[in-house]
Length: 342
Image 1 (tube, helix red, strand yellow):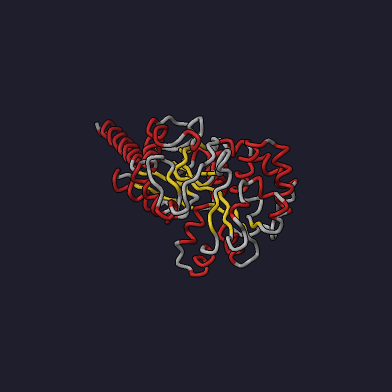
Image 2: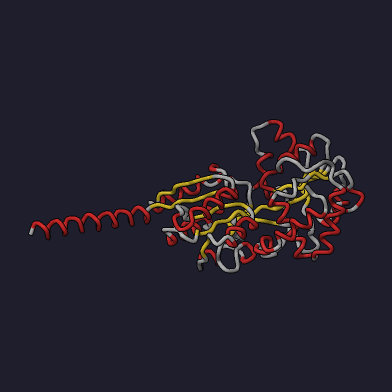
């Protein structure tokens, strides 16, 4: 009897341990995010409050997080991978660290071109990579398309980040899809000749350079421009006020756009809860938060952008499926390298 009781007691302990561990997994989600905490945590906190599911947020650079998920393999703690740019989401898919899932909620909420065709990732907020110009020196009637920025009349007038920046790689990848390799290479060769200075710094630095008279045109993501216009830093605000927005390619494919998005990791311990979180991030409530706080365009078509973004005017956006940006990335980088874009 003592032996049987011991066996039963040990069995009960093991069952209790398993049950409690399962409950911990079910009530927690680990989110690996390349977005700054302030740009994601408030909406995660809302989800946690509504569902009772605890969110553990780990933030770092996108490439570092992807390498961490790869190295952790089956033992990864990550349930959700959140990052900017479809090119990075494509890299994670190709690295084999994501899992595909079907969600009617997400398919109904997120336009087809802003999500992976096989359900590996979904875009949640949108930014455009547009042209900012100093109207004191640039007549907006001389602006038209990204392609036209390679014309001799813009020699020495353009500031842009380096070729190792994923935003620029994705822009060139979109042009590859629209124009083919030969035309895109020719464009890149001439575009580089029009740079006012050696590419350096982030998007904000391109605006600051324009304000300082180093160039007249800056290629920038709208998200950064919005943050500068609402910045508490006087110099950033003053720099942003020196430029205006021009939407390129309105008479053909539309302005290049990209996303921040999310995916479920391949070895997530809580895929159902992870899907629940991503669906929550696509809800009207979350999308309105993105629109009002993050200076990004909502992915949903039934949610209005913020008043600041509206002030820049409506624009036609490229409807290319953003998975193509990842597929074309390697060729885009080769084209940029050949052109001497450093």
